[in-house]
Image (cartoon, rainbow, N blue to C red; front, side, top):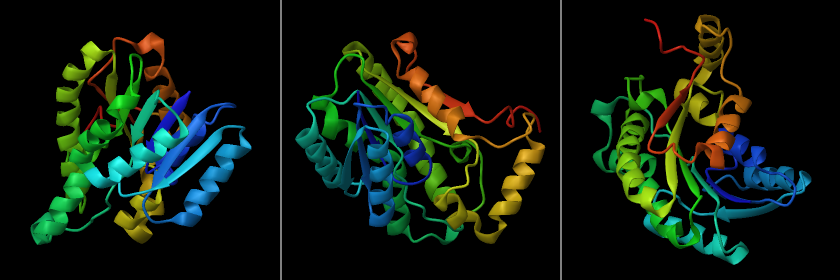
Length: 246
C-alpha cells in the first residue's frame, strides 16, 4: 500500500503517516519548512519497516503540488491513499487581516485540495481514496481562526463537487474533522492558554476525554477499506459527542 500525506511530518498528519507505516508500505510525507521534524518522522516510519519518502514543497500552490507528485512518481507508480493535512496557520481577527496574505492562506487551506488531486490524478485508480483534514472551525466561528476556518469550509464544498465527478472513476474522497488536538498549529493559535483549553474540553466532553490519534486513524483505515466503498463526499466529525448539546 502506498500513501501520500501532505503536512505529514507534524501533528495529525504525522499520526496518520505513522498509522499507515505497516511493514512493506510506502509512506510519502510532505513538509514545508521544519526539516528536523521531517527527518524524525521518516526515521519513525522506517523503524516500523515501511519505506519513507520525504518531500519538501509548498502544498498550497499548484507548483508545489506538482513537485510532490513528481517525487511520488520517482518512488512508485500508484497512490492508494492521499491525505491532505497541509495548513497555513494564519491567525488573528478577520477584519484586520492583510487581504493578500488572507487570500493565500485560504487558498492553501481550501483550494489546494483540487491542486493536489490534479497533480496526482494519473497515479490514482479504482479503489484509491482521498482525505481532507477539516475542523469545526469550518462550520462555526472560532476566535482568530478565520483564514483556516474559511479555507476548511471552502474545501468541504469543493470535495462534494469532486466526489460526484470522482465516483464514476471508482475514486472516493471524504473529510475527517477531529475535535481539538494538541498540535503546534493549535498552540500557535491559542498560545499559553492551550493547556487550560485542552483540560476544559476534556472535562466538558460527554465521552470524558479529548480525541486521541487512534480515534481518527482507525476511521481513516476503515474509510480507505473496500468495506467503505459506498461512502464518499462526507465530512466525519470525531468529537465524542461534544457538538450534540449547547
